[in-house]
Length: 251
Image (tube, rainbow, N blue to C red; front, side):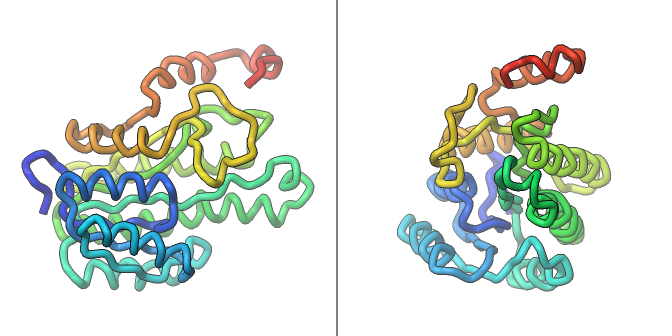
């Protein structure tokens, strides 16, 4: 069960090798979390991630999960919930893709959309129902600032995150009053191994900053969290910018 500060004692991470997810798990373990499940494709990276969290004193398990295999999501998530209550599910999987390449390769573009949106819809519905059945818990979804308005530079990724963001908000409305808290996290560009080599972007943040914002959001019972917080007014302005002008902006 959650403690008095709304922080979880048990955590399931969907996307167990995510740098943001692992930073969040480390922060929560330092506060309260004692049991962690890392769900992802079986790999050395997944086992290494589990080992790094065990070194912090947590009871850590790994389980197979593939975002692109929705038919397996029910059993993958159900296996974890069958072991005991899960106070928080963190949906952290996703891919950036390569916009220039993916525009010329619809199959690759569809894979980005399938991972970031379709896979999240399936996993989100399964996790949300499991949390509702047990009567409590938080479902935290890593969206992106890119979801607010698609850019020419990354509209495939941005559109998939926009779909995820809208889905997560709707799921939060559907679960309101059931004891399940849904929180959408919208970070700017995050410095991780997945963004290495990419040009620096405005409002770039770190996995640790996102983890800190997640903790604060849980304590406050927030429904939406921006990282950094200054992104919110900037993206609100961009969202309402006329399209003809928006096309000429260096965003």
